[in-house]
Structure formats: C-alpha cells, structure tokens
Length: 409
Image 1 (tube, rainbow, N blue to C red):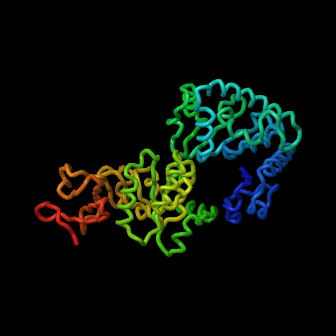
Image 2: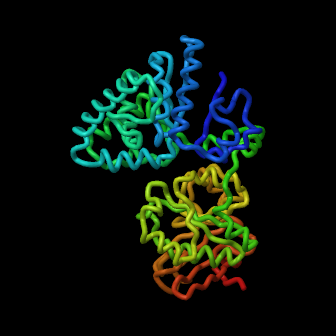
Image 3: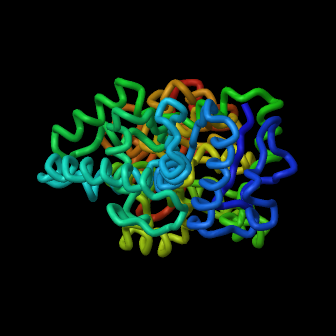
C-alpha cells in the first residue's frame, strides 16, 4: 500500500532513506517540508490532494494517521471531500502529552459527563459543517481549529467513523482521577481496542538489526540537548526519574551517583511524562541549582537511548531499562540489588538503597540516618560501598574470609 507522508517537523527525516512505498505527499516537496510549513497549509493542501485521489477512484480506501494535537488534519482530508465512512479509518498517534492534558483539564472536573455530552453534540454538528463546506478554507464555525484537539474523546466514541488512538506514554489513563463515568468510558475504549497503549521500548527491542540500521538512517535525532557534554568533551549520564512524588531522597541519590561516577560525566535528568518539569517551576529551579540539565519529558526515554547508545542510564526502577543494552544500564536507585526488576536486573551494575543503623547486615557501617549502600553485581574488587550524604564521602568494602566487611583503600 503506498504511504504518503507530510511531517510538521519535516527536518526530522532523511528523505533519501524512506522505506519502500513511502513517499512525500505530492503537495509537499523536500525543501518546504524540511524548512517547515504552517499546519493550515498542510491541512489545506493535503485535503486537496486526497480529494483528487478520491475523484480518480471512488472505491479507494484511505487510512489517515495524525497526531492527537492536530486531528483537524484527518477531518479536512475525509469530511470536506465527503468520502464515505466505509472508505476510510483514522489512527491518532500520541506521546501522551496532549491527550493527558485534555483528560485532566477538560474531563477532570465534576461536570465532565455533562460537558462530554455537550461536546459530543458540537462534534456531530462540526462533522456536518465540514461535509457541507465544499472548500478548503481554514475558517470553521462550530469548533475552532485550535480547539478541536479537546475533542479526541468524542472522536474515539464516534460510532459512525472508525477512530482509534495509540499512546506511548505511561498508563496515565488507569491513573485518571476524574469522574467514574469518564474513567469507565476510557476503560471501555481500551477493552474495545480503540485506545491502545504502545510500549515504544518493546517495539524498538523487537526490531531486527536491519530495521535498527534503517531507522537510524531515516530519523535525524536532535542531539543538541547533549551539547554541553559534547562541548566539555565528557560522557553523558542520564538520570531516569519517576513521578515527582515518587522521587524519594532525590538529592542524596543524585549526589551519591555523582560521587561514584565522578566528573567525567555531564549529568542530565529525564523526568516522568506524568509530572513534566516544564509544568513545575519549583522543580525546574531545583534541578538547575543541582547542576542537572533537564531533558524534555515528552520525548520517550527509549528513543533517546536508542539514538545515542553511549548514554549511561541510572535512576529509579523503570521499564525504560528493559529496552536498553547492558552497557547503558548503571545503578538502580532506592532498592537493593536483589530488589531490581528482574526484566533488567542482570544488566544493572548495582542497586543503591538507604540504610539505617539498625540494619542487620550493614548497620555497623552506618554513621547517620542519611547513609546509602551500593550493592554491586561485580564483586571482584569490593562487595558494597557506603555513601554518607552528610559529609559526602564514599567508602568501599569487601568481605573477608570471616564474612565480615573490611574497608578497601
């Protein structure tokens, strides 16, 4: 099946490396795609071209793919051209950012059920407005072009048009705290295969070597985020965070890791998409004061590691580590080595956990209530290390013949 594409962020692809049967839509060209064009132009020109294809063959079947933030694209291409609903289907693609925002801001209130009913009626009227439009002008009445992204739930509930959505973020839908009726609606959509969570890490890990090479040639990952490490001639260490409330003892763990890995790295932080740093000014300031460089949390961590296999990852237990190579996985925080998730335990170098003076195994080595024990996989030189967060010291220990810990110089 021929696949025609037009990317808003056109510079992200090497167009000479496109897979077989994938082509730029004729309404575009490599120059204006790479430089970027307005979404208005993309909607209009794509719709015109689809209209021409449909006129050539009224039996043609169309599969429309667009991101969840710009769903007006599929509506322009299909409805303005009055393509019968049995002749097309729609797949929305989401990194989770826009859809999570809509869920929380639009449907997180007590009146969400009533609001959804009102929006569903407006969406129905909007579809008819587009069908009656007969031109590709950007102006619309029932729903504004910049408002339509709030209506993705209405689209997924549409019994007339086949619409589904893949989202690659963590399962924020199961964590939705809004009205029960809306959550039940989301659960039903998941059950019916209309709302599908895609594990990007699993997809990447399942690719063959040939597919791996092809993707890296096609996609131009922007490494500017790591320019500081490049300019300093240092390696990259990326802290894999979790939701902000779950980042227990974050500063102490960070300092312990920096003491262990040393000054040969520039340290970056990749937060959880559910609690993005850009939405938390206090956290952003805290990271800055700690000397950590924040990485946009909406970018899938698996992609970052995939396109830069020299990055060392360390942080809280995360499914991200499952898709990484062994050389990319460092220490896992807030757990013993035995407590590391079995999916990536054998890849990890160590587990690090907070330990008190009453600990049966390590208590005699602990000086205060801010002490952390590294438990290493490779025990050739030493078995553990103890980080004292009060005086910022790191001491290494090995077991002697009596199974007692002795300090290693």
